[in-house]
Length: 149
Image (cartoon, rainbow, N blue to C red):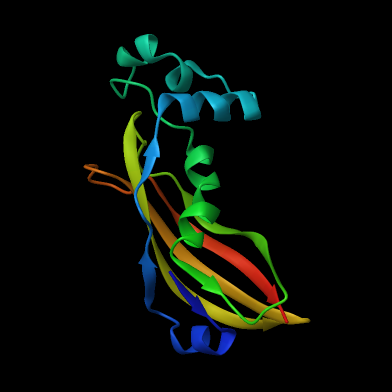
């Protein structure tokens, strides 16, 4: 994992920042997410019923996949020389393909833009999360962070 300053980020706009370590998606993790979010749809939490469903087995919640971004990103790069960073939001989020349970996912991050905002810097990072062995990505979009010095 590398630590980059805001000035170093400005020099890397348009470049890939890295790919995360693999992360295991288990039925237990899916069930815990369902409990935390009160989203107990059978396609996620009932493996027996899900085997007869459209995906041939249970799939992870799209928002579970999304919620892993801070962990996956944190193992790829960090922004140094700032007092604080906050998640400002998302742009263009899509879930093109399901994440089968169990599976392993990885995320690839690309630096899309660095902009000045009041009191700090806004960093836009494109992401693509892929489940191992799947032809299409499971989540794609752009996460927006504001960093303050």
